[in-house]
Length: 232
Image (tube, rainbow, N blue to C red; front, side, top):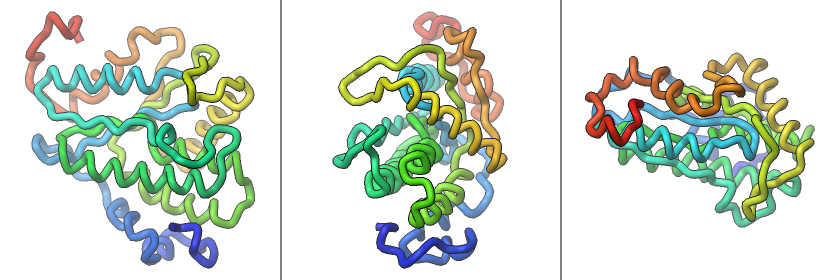
C-alpha cells in the first residue's frame, strides 16, 4: 500500500516514478476523443453524501443503454470498505477506498464503451483530508488523486438539496455533510478541475441535463425505446 512509502514526494513527477503508484502513469496523458467501441468515455457523479448521486448513476446508465451504448456502472466503493468510514474514517480506510476505486474503474473500462462512476477519486480525497489534516501520507495520496483526475471525461457535481437519510451506511450528520460539500467545491476551484453542476431547484431535470452534456461527444444512435425513455 501507499502507506508504506517513506514520505510524501515533492512533485507529481516523483509520484509517477514511484513503483507503488505506477497506476498514475496511465493518467499522465490527455484523454483521447471518444470513439465508439473504444471504452474511452468515463463519467463520474461527485458530491457529498446523501444528495442523490447513486440514483443519477442508474438513470444515466439506463438512458445511455437505450441509445445502444454499452455501459458499466462503478458503484460506491466506500460501502464495501472493511474499515471505518464516515466521520470515523482513517488514512488506511481511505487508501483502501482510493485504490479499490481505481481498480474497479480500470475493470469497467475494459468491458464497456461508457463507464459511469458513483463518485470519483476526488470525493475520496475530500473525506481523507477532513479526517487527517496534516498527515504526511495524505500528501502522497493527493498526488495520486491529482494524477488520476484527468482520466474522467466529465465530472457532474451534485449539490445538496435536502438532509441525508440513514440507509444503514450513510452518515446523517448535517455538519459533516456540509463540510464535505464545502471541501469538494474548494478543491475543485483550487485545482482548476472542470465540472458540470446541477441547479438545486431543477432536480427533476438533472438526468436530462447530463444526457444533453454528453450527447455531442457520444453521438450514439437514436433511442431504441423512445416511449420507455420518457422522451430523454
